[in-house]
Length: 56
Image (cartoon, rainbow, N blue to C red; front, side, top):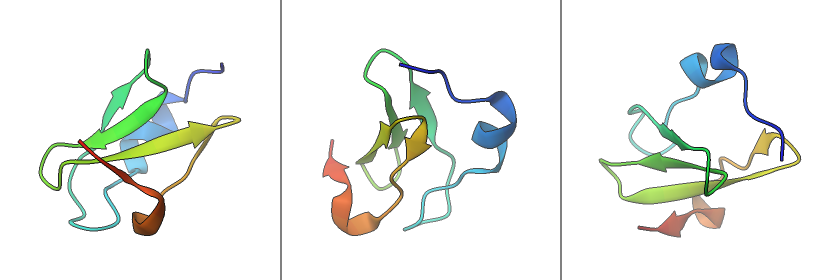
């Protein structure tokens, strides 16, 4: 599992509410506290499709 770069994390936003995302390194996911959605990361690529997100 490769860690996401700080630069990438600084520009990513939730595709639904445009809010900040929290990087959960242990789970390898990005989470939006506002929308209560979790976006998985595959091969160091965040899957930012709302249809693919998991509910928290």
